[in-house]
Each structure stands twice: as structure tokens, then as C-alpha cells.
Image (cartoon, rainbow, N blue to C red; front, side, top):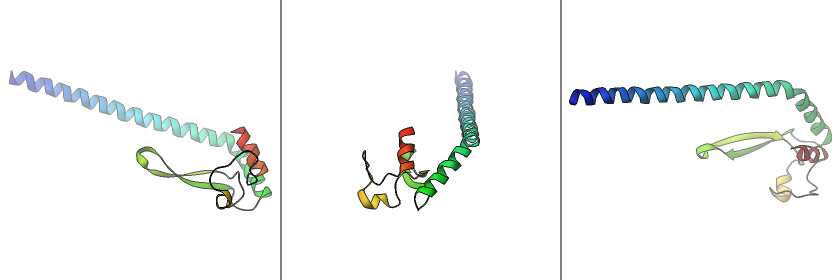
Length: 116
């Protein structure tokens, strides 16, 4: 009886290891696919992104990108970069919320918000 129990537990642990290995390969594959899609998207969209950056720079002073700290999975912080759609220092002028007809939103920013 003891020998059968050891064999059974050994086979079960091998099955569990196979599942863990499968999950590891799946996670790596998903990460690779996500990276490839992101890379191809950047290759296709970079000319449009350059045009948007030039338009933002011509319309107002300040940086082209807006940087914001956010919380992700497991409350881990990360930094997100977006094209700036409001005038520089807009947060100090009226808080984080915006509304229709907000004077802090630039013309290019208004266009970008409508397209999003």
C-alpha cells in the first residue's frame, strides 16, 4: 500500500509540474505577442505621432508629453505618458477634472479628445 501511495504522489507531482511549466510558457508567449503588437503599432503610427507632437509644440509652450503616476496590479505604481491636451500647469488652475468648454484644453487637445 505504501509503495502505491508513493507512486501516486510522484505521478501527481509530475502532473502539477507539467501544468506549472505550461503556464510559464503561456505567460511568456502572451508577453512576446504583446511586445510584437506594440512594436508593430509603433512602427506604423510613428509618423502620426511626430505630426501630433509638432502640432502641440507649435500651439503652446511646455512639454509635448503629460506624465502621470498611476496604480496598476497589486497597487504597483507606474508612469504613463500621454500627449498633452491642456495648457501647461492646468492642474494648478482648476484641478484634475475637466468639462465641456474648459478653457484649459488646447485646440489640438480638443481634437485628440474627440478622436479618442
